Image 1: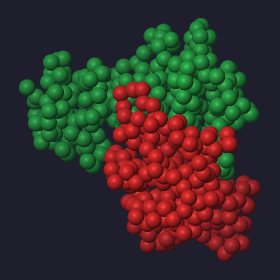
Image 2 (image 1 turned 45 degrees about the vertical axis):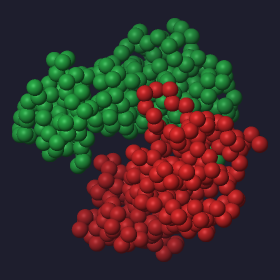
Image 3 (image 1 turned 90 degrees about the vertical axis):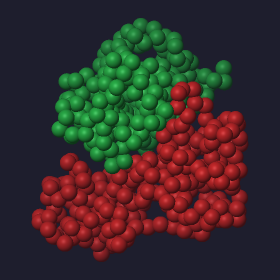
Image 4 (image 1 turned 180 degrees about the horizontal axis):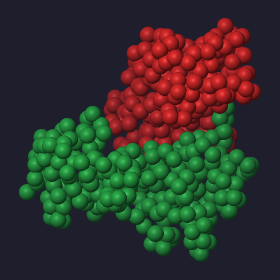
Length: 267
Length: 267
């Protein structure tokens, strides 16, 4: 049976609320995800929250019932609460019907089977959580094998990244690795590393992107360090007809990823 | 000569600070843009702020001097101020060197020459200012003729949209119009209207996108109203290999726009 919590001072509420901060996520090894659609996708993908908070007025929704039942069957904690507390957990004036507290999960490079997908996404020092979430969402769409986060990227388990991923956090494997470790792993098997660059005349539609292709996206403001760009097998540019010399990082990743997908699906 | 303002209570500072709110933007007919790179691009494109606030410690930067000189030559107001006031104007802890107050500008459908570009972007009830700015940035990159905002979209002059546009607000023409007015204008000349849809089997790479092609993007959560989708000449889908059925709106717009550009540049 779900328990009821209506006091903001309740320790479970306080512990969940703290997960909006990175240091508490690290300390607890947990993160927040919100919204019935996303938590349902997570459930269907085999990821259940340790705790689920739900509003009393949505307790009769079939998907809320399914979620609560699954959480309790797995030994988790289902908590009926107020819209106000849900709002404080989600940080939104109009929170979704549910907020879940999940255990953080992550894989190591050694866990990845590079032959399992034609496209892999790699991001270096990505700073914006919305970009990270959007790249995960694109990764889901193009069937990417995973997202590899290089060096000091924004936390993929931040509330903003989880929200922007629209559930793809639960479907796209995530690995964090230093550059040296990534390159050592990459060169120990098949696969080409491809980056956008301003210092090339090679159009992004010219190369053949055989599987597996690893698409490397650099920091939003600075792009890739020159040494990283030099380590790529292929450097390409996209046509830029306007005044600017760059696209949003998540947009550039998506345009590249669809070019790779389009080539690979024609074969 | 620039004047100096160091008091947050100064009326000019207060009036500029108010422009972070939509109702004050409407009342004053002005908006904020920040950052030396963006204001320099605006200046080079012929758009000067009515007021420019700059930090004393950046007064010797050649681009700040060029900006201040241009603003004063045009009869505008140059104000040397403190990092603290710049921070309050920009809403960022580490503000750029300059913040400008610009007069809002906008065009009407009748001002657009649809034969001047092969790609036009159209967004309907777009809600996220980051998406709007990112779409403007993509529009700049693909050489779009403009961005047409249909019905109740987020304000393109909001601080977040201006920031995400990375200066493209000043280079890509913007029109706001109700759907009925847009369709009447569209059907009074050449051009096909293309939308992504879940209710089609037509792959987005199949149609020929002749110039001018108008790419219609719907609301982030709800997509296009059925009647709007039905009014399009072409409805296409993108391959989606994962669990989700949609991409981020700015990402989907960009992938479509580059397909159109790729087709048109091959001719």
